[in-house]
Image 1 (tube, rainbow, N blue to C red):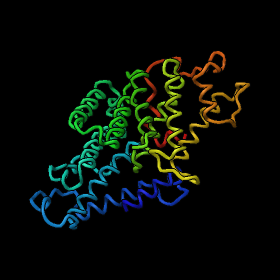
Image 2 (image 1 turned 60 degrees about the vertical axis):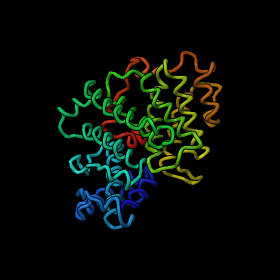
Image 3 (image 1 turned 45 degrees about the vertical axis):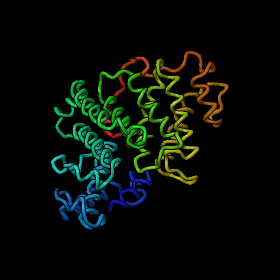
Image 4 (image 1 turned 90 degrees about the vertical axis):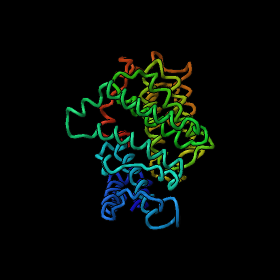
Length: 329
């Protein structure tokens, strides 16, 4: 079921729309239900985790449980859906680091912070939901995130996946903080775009999450004068990552999330300059991006409500649809 959930996610928007079989939520929910039936959520502390067959049923079950915990939290925050696995059933043991490895162990820790965000933003209680946007609540979440960073900083450079995942969670926390300034959002979004375009970035089932959140943030920041130029350069980096198949699992005939991301880039750039007489909307993305950040920009530029406000971006759409849902609007 875990593999079926990953396969459903690879189909991207088509499964979200019910066009290519069951959506990922069905497979994740079914897998969690089966895991509960098998009691995989029970903590079995003892020497047997450190000794014996590394592929015993008990150890394989424990690894599968942590895969589900990670998938559940990333699915919840990306689609604005409730968690299947509550925090009360998520207890990491020191033996788990030896069992699943250093990077997965810290990814589970980071995913738990992500789960706290998801739980606050998807609650049916309007009072709690409104409070989650309070700067003080966001400050507590950022404090939790910074304590995580401090604990892994010694091995930071060798863990590309963990590094970009950290900036992903940081950006989400900032986006949900009504007092965040555009430049505060720009830094993690650009870092994510740069890492996705780097040749050392491994292809993982989470990479389209990174690209989607970075892109929708950069697209919004491109409508604000003070961050416009740097935001367009970040959008170019994401486009280059897609072209070179760096950091994103793409194929020439792909209709997955990479295609949805590519289409959003083209749509926003072309619509922005469709009225500019010398720009050809069927031209290259490079030409359109040069227009966006160069001296050939349309006279007077383009100012959206975001640009006029010049403050933090609206978190309402992210909270209602999640970042993967937002990219399809």
